[in-house]
Image (cartoon, rainbow, N blue to C red; front, side, top):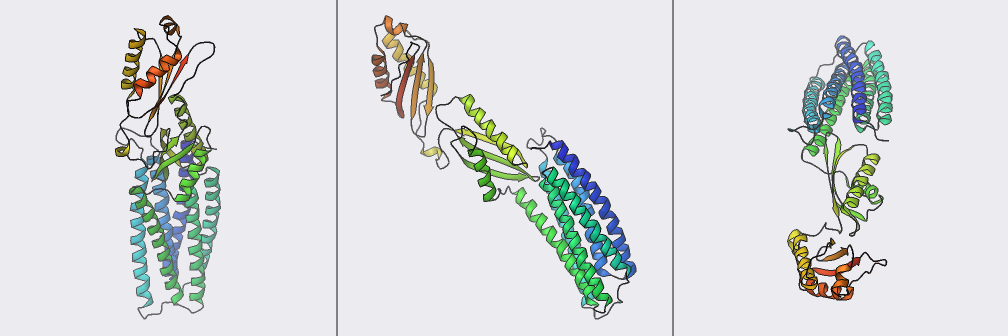
Amino acid sequence: MRHNPNEKKVAAQRISVIGALVNSFLSVIKIIGGFLTGSAALVADGFHSLSDVATDMMVIFLVGVSHKKPDKEHPWGHGRFETLGTVFLAVILLLVAGLMTWDSLKLLFSGEIPAPPAWPALVIAAISILANELLFIYTLKVGKANQSNLIIANAWHHRTDSLSSIVVLFALAGAMLGVWWLDALAAVLVALLIGKIGVDLLLKSLAELVDTGLPPERIEALQKTARETDGVIDVHHVRTRLMGGQSLLEIHIQVAPHISASEGHYIGDSVCEALKEEFDDISYIIYHIDTYDDEEVLAADLPKLASRREIQQVIDMAFSDLLGDIPEYHLSIYYSKTSFAIEIKLPDNRMLITNRLSNDQLQHYLNETFSTIKGYRSISIWTSTDTLEHYSP
């Protein structure tokens, strides 16, 4: 089931507001509690929660901006605002992690043994673990219900907060038992965790900014879904990129060469519908209808084939020479890589009867006329008699 973009926007903002409120509370009690109880690890974990508040607030803002409809200045939408905001956030996280690591290492190698943290620090760490686990469960439930990878990823971010608080809890217990350096070491570990999150966000965002394609296994899944659509012979030349967590596709769809342009367009629309139904993160698809696989064919390698106007001029001249006039007819041209075939449908054969010209003679004359034209392959002639006669050389 494909969800309404506005519903996903509201769900993402609502759960982000809840996350921001919970993390604001946790950051306050951990930073203040860490200073009062003398725990560097708890203070570090408090700044970790504070960075999560910034993440949640940025998600709230960027979700609103990135879901705006395309306009003249941003014809592809506003998804890049989310990407740029994530880069900014990642840099902030790396700076915070660097400062926290520096302060904790100075404490470890200062030679001074700090006083062990007070017992309330353990209570605060336990509260943090419980709150983050509940937030993880609720956020994951909302993410799965809305099939939103963004919300699901944010849920696992809450799970990392819970794990970091568990590390702090054991470090505090160890420091209280006399292993004083465990508290400072835990602060370093939490800082490194923040740094890893920052690096992951930065690399992912930079990959989007340079239009990195989707993973090969994802492209294979996209192609499989497209090939299963009725009327599709094959798909090729699939290009992908990400914008604000949404996938943008360009795909060539190969269909039978003798179908109408409208049917080819219908098949292309059907492929788009199937892909968007199967993959919830696809926001835009450009498709190109092919009657042959042109993936490895360079335009410079293809022969210059006659255009419709040129072909029609030859047919009109042939009719004029044979019949003295040009009858009404419907012309279909079927191009391949290096050749073309022609199909002519006459509304009636009265002019042929009047001129005592058989279909065989007309067929032979047109075939001879086109034989000197580069790329000509065959011609078929149909008339509206009771039994349609079909000819091909």
